[in-house]
Length: 220
Image (cartoon, rainbow, N blue to C red; front, side, top):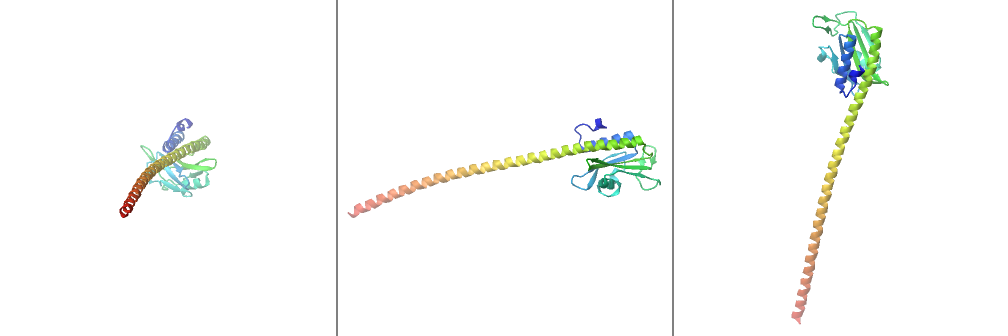
């Protein structure tokens, strides 16, 4: 299981590999894997094993709703024994037969008392003590790798946000530099116009003095 789950897997790839490995090892009839939505008390169906009615399942489950939600809330496993075959449970479908499940095992995927997901499997035969120990150990292993993938995805998300913020800051800095350059250019133009106006005023004063001097000379 560790070998299969090791690598740069996405959340989807990890959950599918995990439920498939459990399915093959325990010879289960069907199984589903839900992952907790971050910062929410809901779980989302990401992977299933031999479950043809997957589309009929709720893609999201609230904490406390059904066995999946109850296990998520309590972080404790639940085992259900079904005594009546016609009970509305989704059947185990093979190429030649349709068999109702007899046992349903719902296990939390927790690490350090933090829930990351829930796995549920259905079987015809009761799991042995050895198989139950494998299920316990497997869910602990899956929870560890699930935590690692979630952390990796969170880091990638933060890096993306950081890169976007950096680009936005660089764009704002570029615009500010352009605005400063434009202001400097306008100031230079204004200074040039002021100097030209001062020259014109000086010329006008000089012409006015000359005109006044000529007027005084005429009066004499």
